[in-house]
Amino acid sequence: MKEKILATSTELFGKRGFPETSIQDIVSMNDLTKGTFYYYFKNKEDVLVQIHEQFIESLLMQQQEIIQADLSAHDKLEAMVQMLIENIRTNANSAMVFFREMRHLSNEKTRDILPKRHQFQRNIASVIETGMLSGEFRSDLRADMLSFGVLGIANWSYFWYDPEGEVSEKELTHIFMEMIFKGIEEEKT
Amino acid sequence: MKEKILATSTELFGKRGFPETSIQDIVSMNDLTKGTFYYYFKNKEDVLVQIHEQFIESLLMQQQEIIQADLSAHDKLEAMVQMLIENIRTNANSAMVFFREMRHLSNEKTRDILPKRHQFQRNIASVIETGMLSGEFRSDLRADMLSFGVLGIANWSYFWYDPEGEVSEKELTHIFMEMIFKGIEEEKT
Image (cartoon, rainbow over all chains, first blue to last red; front, side, top):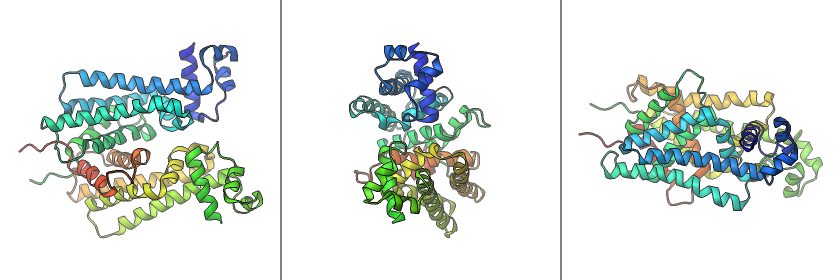
């Protein structure tokens, strides 16, 4: 039941926005009483907190699997971008809520979640640094700034990419990784 | 006066969000009467529409100047990224409102503004295509997808980049353009 309430709320917050969704909307859509809602959640913010936590923790867990895999820095970075793009299909609304409604969390709750967002970005920077040390990547650019560039490419996709469109997730990842790894300039030969 | 109301509203919508800001908040911050507000704007949505229009039209105008300049495709693309990053300093709140509050526009208003957002993206794709034709850029990757990647890098900066921090706008643009043009892989020699 809790998962069902979370799923419906994610859809409502994603489509209408957090302030525009009432607890009444959430219970109506689930054919529940408010009593059932309050059995699982303290209030509407509590739902938002749990959507944020589930989303970032799922991403961190998937990222952790990639980090621990026996892969080159190159392949880890590619796997992370691919993972983010594949998550659009299953988690578009969660991502919308995550990127857009964070400001509705209390300062206290933001203090819990923000470090996890930063951790995700720092893990990308750390893969890039490893690749610089191993000689896979050039070492004349700041890894932290590059990690924000890579995250920008992947996260921005949540705002425009349609997984049902003519470009598959695999092809999109390929194009992005070609740009990130080799760049778009024609090689001078 | 109209510009002042727009500036205050942009700040309020950016910091608190559109639904959380009332016309009363806007007039209080400007020491105005509601009568003065309604002399310039039909309602709160009208303010949001004008913020969106000013923001995207200013970007399109700056982009147009770059397109018309006597520059290579390479330099045009770099100038566009630099322009977007420089706009963070002056337009952070407008950008927040632009990226986040679009869903509060009526369908009719969205129909006016969406084509301008698309135009901005298509102009980037078109510079990339020109570079492919001139041999500056490799032509084995889709220019439209690349344009979304470049936009993602630049637009994402609005969510994390602090122009007062240790990395200057110029340095950030340099790092991003090195990745976009040459990639982060160590060249095999």
